[in-house]
Image 1 (cartoon, rainbow, N blue to C red):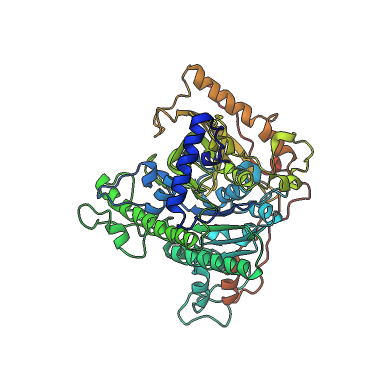
Image 2 (tube, helix red, strand yellow):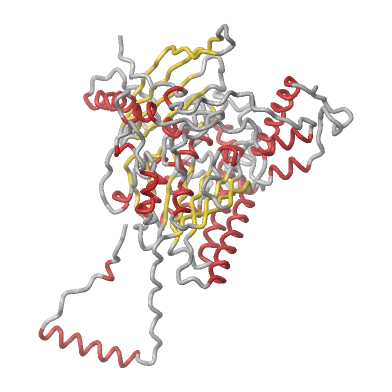
Length: 598
């Protein structure tokens, strides 16, 4: 990071003849240019930069040109993101905290890994002590706005905290609510539509169908242009309001934009976005119904899978173009120099790298790796690439530091009994990367990841825990059995534990398990994992002493409205609330120690 550009450094005094010569030259040059107007002085930088934080859902970094991706036709997937990286900094080895949207965005916004913010699945809410980046910046005087386009970023999941505006820009909800209700138990039923009986059973059936329809609508709707339109309009309004107020220094802003289109289904709004990558004519298969299409399977021909991936690349190309429109707006409004632009992806997608497709199934790098580029002209060195391992949980604390608001964040450092002072800063787990941005070497920090895979086999869910360092990933999975009890409750019984170790530098595809190796470096990596998840460590203290938050509502606002259209006017949350003071450890699976070979 450049705090004082080299051109501002005052040279040593010139002496003797050199001084006389310099004075003569200066006088002659001044005579020649005396009729030319002097350039205006550089506008001073504001005390606090603006921030535009952009999240690209389901984007694998290895499909971006700036991360080395080359297509068979030579067409670019990511012209604008590539340019942003060339003008700023790229983190080569960033990892998310999980492999699906809801908890990864809580990590992005709070600076907490999943096991610390507490959102482990759809039914979990963030901890009571969690603070969002938007809250902290708003307290420091920032204007805040966010526009999203995916189902897991709704206000019911507490993402709107700290935002003056938090809006769904996808257009999905408006379209769904504009449809005539079908299958209603009340007067709105259309003839021939399947009716759901009133009562708990009918409500459950209707709610399941409504949720499925909402999710599918998000998967097939092209929403990136609407997100950019909303962001551009907000920027125009913010600048206009500042000019009208005639303030000495414009109010800084934090704008968050979430783009969902890269998430499957892979169906760019115009076929031309995918056609740019066709090297041998139109593929037989496309990206429609990617996850459910039985023709897309692990044994398919590589050539056919590559054809499907042209539609994935087409979605990236389409979304990148919309990101470019936001960057153009910043330039047109004269905001580029004083705005930190950050582009991240929340997780990737697997295309049978380890036998699966999609995400939210495992913690392999194909879905855990994330893109992270950021630009701040004149302050971050252009074209820099940082190789150290960094985490999604480091984004928020880095921005807090770069924005110069750490002094205003002291409120969030109020001690929590049982936690050590260094366990969190500004309410966050992650650490600022400012030293690395200023030239310091990687500090080989430990990044934590977690995944509760309960949807593929609800009776035998698999929990995955990972510790990722600059070189190694230690991956531990544990299978649980859900056993019904006489009182009607369900008990989670721990089962088999499996441990693996991968050298991500030598084996980025994670094909060689080193868990049985006697290499001292491997054994040190395992010891680091055990220390990180031990009851006496930082995570253990967090689980023991940080209080759970309330669960989110069982239905989103649009789902409730759609059910009301179907005649279900009262939707009751039957889940019992957690007793006051319930700590994270009471609801969070305890990470197992690394299993030793017998």
